[in-house]
Image 1 (cartoon, each protein chain N blue to C red):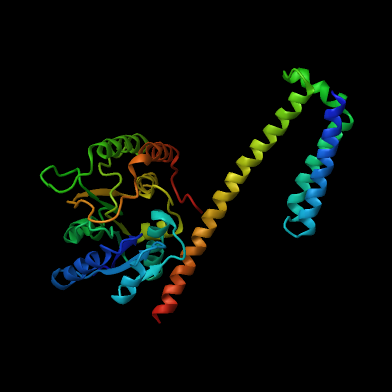
Image 2: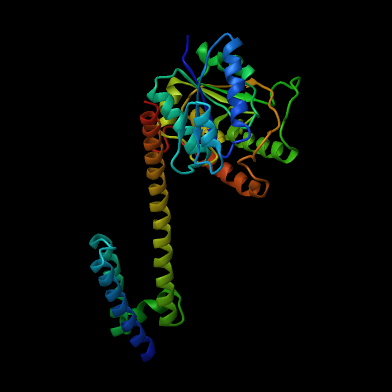
Length: 113
Length: 239
């Protein structure tokens, strides 16, 4: 793997850790959800420091170069996250609907008294 | 005597909601039976709320717009809380005719059915508005898929003039499809072995407002409804 890509990956991984720490510090991200991002950052840094580890998988899966393999993996993970978010949003929408209905009924009963 | 509640979902119906309400009150004065009304104001941005307040029309104001499914379900919740025997969904835009209510709830009163759908297509002698040609094709396709899934032919799959009994009020108040509610809830009710009957009614062409099914959304609507019917399961979906 190209040296520049290695450096980019290490820098990107470190930035990801810093950004995650920032959101935790601002109390915007619960620790529970930050664990995934720390894990992702550590994997990215590991790939940057020891690319030979990754290149073992690259050819066997069918990618021509290690960099393509890395991009492929990142895309797969992002797709999975987006899918999970769709499910989470649908569930939140369902709960908000129930909340709205119950509060609206209570409010109308309260007003008519 | 059964306690009957008319549930009117209303989104920006300032021009027609009062006429609709008055037609029901007129019916109460001369009809054989009396019905209660609850209007569910689905976060209207026009003067619907003011008209409801000024005319003392019983209503629930939803804090935000929930869409037709969420609004109708609010009405079913209200019916459940207040112990109604029958809940009738009724459009606020003047499409539905209250004089058919007795024949609509008759199968429920005589315990022949759990749900009765006011249908435009089962009595060819009745005239009235039968929807546009493209929409009728859409209704036929949805009808075909419901038959495929449940083995029961429902002709007017999108009719919003429907009555349900106490068992279904309880079930729907807990779980009701938020989008495309009519065909999907009918399919789910049939799969759960509830009895559904269609009753011939005449409908008017919408006087004001727009249908919740817009022309440009038709293809999207069809795909969604068909997939929902295919994946429909027996029992309460949202629990």
